[in-house]
Image (tube, rainbow over all chains, first blue to last red; front, side, top):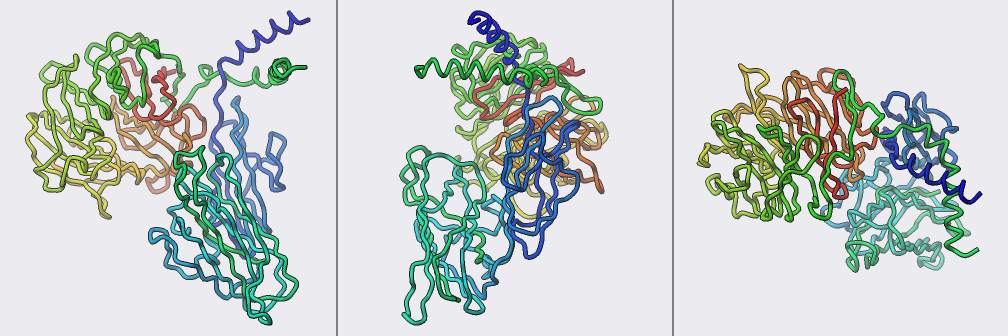
Length: 259
Length: 343
């Protein structure tokens, strides 16, 4: 039995030697990852015999997942995962894109001064429903290095707030990392002070692919509020596995939502 | 069960499990790549060079000499130049002094083949014979008045006009095209950066396009703009050939066609998303090796992108006298060139 298995293994290894080519993933085409009511997403992959498969429930797409035929209309927060497959090739890796719906409308989102190269001029840049593309040069991202990003959110009226979403960029080849820590406070009119409402500490143990990371923090706020404060601390020391070991990382933010 | 035993068992199980799936797939040399009348089969193991004795780093450019030999330029200083026969047998190597070896152009000068090497690190263009003897060295172009020092000048490519004039593309420097006579005397410069159509951004490659005998021209890559730009031999801008999505390295003319390696897809930067384009006499894409064949609207192609991961970062195309194609790649794990045979 052992011998037969060994022979079979040798045969299979030989036939595996000429690895087939892998397909590249499809191209996703959309105006922005952020939207008010709904958004239309087109997908493109022009390779005879190959098709695009996708999921919107967070599961990994495969040959049995729906085949893309016409533009997809999305009207709620959705993680889209897509592959190309077929035509005698290995299927592509999965590409992932998150689509984020408008939450509680903010009156203003103010921010501390970013690095001059990545300080965009539009004051509403963090609430304009534009961006969500993993391209740090596209004019949508605020970039910080070393200094803490301090953000203040003013709502139109006092209301119950359950969570905030911050869209970060992860592009480690360009030294752009997720933050070291994010802290959220709300302003208590009675106490005339900011009260801690949420906190998240990030780890950076292994390399991640380039992607947008729309990160949600659940808030512990019992009373209606109209004033929130967020501080995002950039990673102060790039970890040892990266070429920039020990240096300060960049922190990039392009949109904030309140729910 | 100890750990080693466990791994053996699981890898065997995995092999058995994946067997049917693999048998249904096509091996690389079974696949026909490209479109229309430009379709190829690939040989990924073309080079017979021994990787220990004759290693390569980035394989930047390739040309064929008058004797049919295929010449490869790499920035590996153990052997900057590797000379093959068409079957991939390594015939000869030379060169240890070109750490930034990047551009390789062959010109037949009164019956004798000469090479022009652009060295990014040395900030120089070096003309040699086929044995590597230096015939001429061009330093940074002080005459232009545009350069404060040699470091600002990072030449990537040359093209030699029929009269022997040398055009140097400063593709990693200031994006000027600098024109010299055959002896290396400065004539003029043009291109450079800016917002007008005549300007260039990453002028990575240049060639002489003599397919229209009455109107020969220069074709220059403006790689970050995903385009070629055409100029007269005296530097007057003619027009732009837009190739959206394609980081075109250098144009190569052979017969009626223009071939170009595309380093990567604009839609997947830094992700080994290159392919190889073939354009007809009207500069329309008629075949894409490893990518899509675009539709045209108002003479502009739709977005070009990689569809099959045949290449990582293709950097140059060489077409031999039998219409075989050779592809040199940048930053692709010290991979030797691939050969593609027309079908």
